[in-house]
Image 1 (cartoon, rainbow, N blue to C red):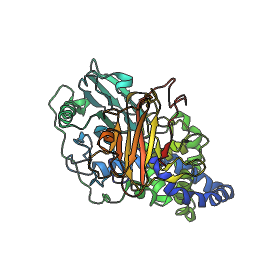
Image 2: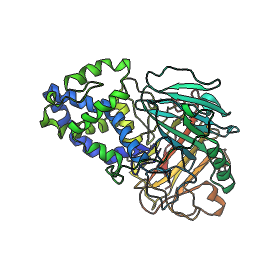
Image 3: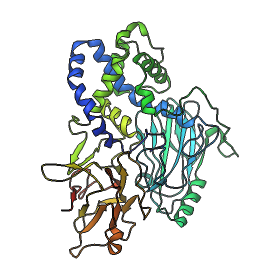
Image 4: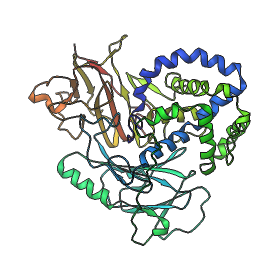
Length: 476
């Protein structure tokens, strides 16, 4: 989603290039260390296993450490309503989007269930995934339609009776992050329509069902670092600090049955769910090196993923998000560079940094002109919507005379004589008659990201490969 500074970017895979060199240099060292010490190897595995849960907790602390909702932050149990798309001056979050407005909240369902009530979206695209410590469950237009509905999010081991008409969503962890998205065209009229929907979303504890309830003011902890990016805060922990927090979190966010073999390994280095971390079972000499090597190994998975991450026509993307099973390293990778990623059936985010130039691919630069061509009838096959977003080299929107940060079917795109559609990607206007198809670029380097919401699952489909995303080509 994109609520913590330089952290929660669904677009995460564009980070691979910037860390690729570090990961490449670490490859040989990782291999040597993993083979050279059973304890070190176990610690690296444990770090990878816990990366999602630890990152979720640190994200929760930062987002909720305010007295009342403001911007993209809000106390536990408060709805956070993002009211408009950011502009080119926005620098709080990398890779923002200009397609959906967010309605989010962090919940603790370990104490009691929380009830979420959604209004009738009148067939407008909406998605309200709930991200727990390990995976995602999704109510939204694809799975539950857009009619009015009420559901309760229950925590581990909860037993009880819900009011009639309230659907239960079981969370295996106490931490739950509601990440609601509502499609919006960005016009003043559509902003007003979506704001009305946001204001009709209700959130309250089950004990307040049927009552007037006002969320209490949040408590602010001055010891929480509100400036350093969450990922940096996690990566800066030494292994002892990290494993101490992981053991604490496992008490209320238990592993699944499928995690049993990993739980046995964790115990060998002093990590037992429900107990404090036993530092006597861990060699303190590894405290600094485990996080460094483990994170480099996680990032290496981008390039050596055994098909978990695809590279097609210069676009990098994955169809393995949202549900991970025991694929801990893929879960850690998505957490590190795309926390909040939806299931592929709900959204896929191909990202491109280089133009197709045959044998040689060069980074995009506004000094050149590019074109992305969809053949007749072969625009991205989706039931929701698609868009192509422009970012500068730091993953922020680009200031331009049209105030256009993305291009999609909501623009009056003009087709060529043969029915194909060209998206014109360049710094200068292609001319008034072609501006409907223009995605303005900066003068320097830039990055492209496509968003495919509710992609087709059968031919034509990016999920099964029957639809292939076309390359971006330099105009000669």
